[in-house]
Structures are given as structure tokens and as C-alpha cells.
Length: 592
Image (cartoon, rainbow, N blue to C red; front, side):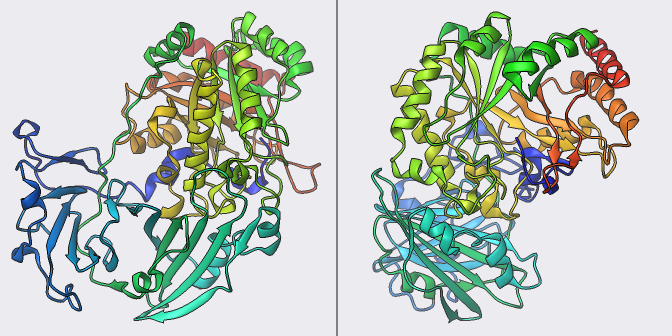
């Protein structure tokens, strides 16, 4: 896919997006699982067990040993307390300050949250239920008609207000984007002083909602010129948030203690509706110890498949098992020449389809975003159309939906869609349900691809915040490009680092990994020898990362803004004898 040229610089897909997110750990000795009790998972994959068994009365008891009078200032009588340790509610009466601790005080109609690991206090309504499963990147509270997510964000610009303008609210506050996407800004951006912080408050409403989804979005950023972090609160609701001022005004910073950890694992759920052929393909791929090399080739349905691919195969002595294509949502959901793809299937090849919610090839993020209308429930018919096409095709496909979403260069990225990854996860699940209803999912292996790391940087844009339910994901894709301008970091290093960071969540052996797209350039065009050596070594190294089942080379160049000059040389030129020999040598070593 075409992107702005500055984006693919030694990028490691999900690994980069998780580098900051995977920082929590539990240093304590872990009790035995067989002792019973509730469990939680650390960021390093270790499991913390609360070995005691508690009654609900014990879990909500007022415990003097956990109380802090400074944190209770202004509260009335405390009727009950809850203590979350490493994401797990516990009846413990003492606190280990090395852990991820959160105390909830119930008083009157409010619940005071003391988040020790992130270092703040906030009052919320009593009926909002907490979710601390992704504590290093966000905490959440959900009421009957509202959801609140809170993230702690690093200040990386000299001016935090500039950072908010450029890296969070770039599209949200743009009048043209608002108009094209039927987003109403409810009043001017508000600023108020809350203790040591300035609070920036933005209120938005999505017009034309037909789906049963949140349509009010309220954004609160709390920052101070003397702090290296700021706090981001995002409210989603069906009506304007009741008691918003009280919630915001209650926020106060406290010294951070302990370390936030994860209490989350993702497990494969094999779809019950898969055909035998789809299941066999998936299980074969998941159990395979051999890497399979595929390609996306320009002009695929003409010279690409009829001439370039056969020539590549002849000159490298390798038959490409996977052919990739891209399809855009466009104005009607998109359509493909399925007779052509039937030929690919008859030729014994597998198909990877990257489907993207864009109608301008991701070229203008200030334009209309189809994703927002899909979220509204206004594009169900268009989704049903493509689902029926896949059902009619009737053969298994690898379906890679909206790759590189945690970026700022795709039409469906978080920053250009209400600055909230929730929209991405919600539309993914909506689409999956529609495809189920239309009978397409029996033929589909759904792949989530995190692209080239979190951009904008920050916890709110972490890959984990985009992850939909595992009921509708069966494979994890990584993406890493080496453009050749800054050396030639090996394929093995790029992807072994990525796998290592993902293991705590997507366990090797259970989740198959793939590379949805990748490539190696030759810098300004003069580094052919280095690129060729990189390719040959890459194919040899695939044996050392057997959890990666296949990879698709993106055989198309990236162009500069003049659309004429080549920026990144990723297209494979079958006339380059040394390049073809590098592939030939690498494939031979890979198969030996």
C-alpha cells in the first residue's frame, strides 16, 4: 500500500507499539496455582496468584490497615472498600507497595479511586465498574450508559499544548474534518485550572447514529508545565456525561508507588462455523515449522500474475504459495474479480486479502472516513455485499483487516477516527458479526496487523487498545520494513524482538504469526549488494523463527511527494540477476 515516504524506517510492527506498554513486572516470588484463589498476569508473562479465598463481604470490607487519611480527605463515611492488587480484587488487609495497587473507597454516591501505580485520585459514580486488565496502558470504568478510559501519557514535545494539537487532536478539532464526517463540536474548547493542572475539555457528538453505540465523546487532558506526563480521560456515552465537572474537579496527583502490570492474556478461539478446508489450512499453518514466502505484486491481474510472478518463480526456483491483494471499502464496499482469484486457487495458491476502510487510498485523512459511518451502522449493506462475494468464492482466505491502524497515515487510524481506538475495535467486531450473518466467516482466517508501531506515540494509541475480541481474530501479523537508508538490521533481529514482546499476550504455539507485508530497500538505489545479502540471509534465518508461518513481500516502490521520484525501492526487479540469485540461494537454504 502507498504511504507517505517517511513512515517505514526500520519499523517493527507490534513490537514497537508494545515497547513502552510492556514495562510492568512483578518481582515477588509467585505462589502456587494449586492453592486456589484469583489470578493475574504480569507484563513479563508471569502469573500472580492470590492464594486466599474471600467472601464478597471480605472483598468489600472497610480495612483500616489499607486506609490513608490523606486520600480520604473530603469523603464522608466510607461504607465499603475494594482493593485491587495486580489487577485482581483481593480481601487482603495489607498492601505490598511493590505491586500494582488500587484502592476504591465507597462513600455516599461516589467511588473514590486511588491509583497508586499511576499516581492519582479521582472520584467516579459508584456503579462504574473497573477494568484493570491493561493497567500499564489504560484503566477503564464502565457504567450503564458510559465508559471512561484513563491513560498516562509521556510529554515528548517542549510544549504539551502543541503535542495535544498535533498528536492527539489534529483531526478532532479540524472544522473541515468535522463537517465531512458529521461531527458536532459542542461548544468551544474549555480550559480550567484544577489544582496544579490545566484541564483541556473537548466535547463532541457524532450525528446520524443508527447503531446502538456511544455518540457523545468527551476528552479531558490534564497537564502541567512542570510534569513529564499528562493524564488523558476519554468519556464515551449515550448522553452528555452527568456529573462531569465533579469527576474532573476531583482529580489530584499523588506520589506514584509500585508498578502497573497486565492481567490479560489472549487465547485463540477456533470458529465453530469454519469449513473443514479452512480448519485444515489453519491447523496446517499453525503446526508448520517451515516459512512460506508470498508476494504482493503490482498489476496483479494482468502482467503481475501472467508474466512477473512466473518469471520470478522460474529464476528463483521457488513456487509462491501465497498471493496478496488489497481491497478498499470505497463507496460500495469494494469488489474483486473473483474469477481471477478462482484461478489462483486452482493453481494451488493461498490468498491474503488486505481490506481497508478507505475511499481515497489513505491519501487524505482530513476527508470523509468510512469507518465512522460503519460505526454508526450506516454501511451494513456495503459490508454485506463484500461478505456475499467471499461466500460465493467459497475458499479459505487470509483476511487482514485495516492494517497499520495505530499510525497517523491510514484513513482508519485512531487519531483520524475520534482519537480513540475504541472505534477500530467496535467496527471490527461489527463487521465480523455481519460476515457471520452472511455466511462468509466459514472461509475466513482473520488477521490483525499492528503495522509499524504506535504513531502517534503514547499509551492511548497502543496496539492493545485496538485489539478486538478474540472471537474474531485467529492470527497475529507483524510488519517490519528495512528501507536501506540507515543500515541493514537483520530480519532475524527485527522479528525476534517483536515476537519476544508479544509472547506474554499471544503465546507461541497457540497463536500463529505471519508477516502481512514486509520488504527491504536499497537506500537511494545504490545499495543493491547489501539488500541482496539481507534477502539471502533473511530466508536462511526463517528456520530460527518457526512461529512465523509466512511473510508477504510488498513488491511495489514508495514514491516521494512528486509521485515520480522513488523513495523506497521495494519492488522486485526480475531483470536484476544478482537479486534473483540471492532469492534462489535463500530459498534453497530455506528448503534444505
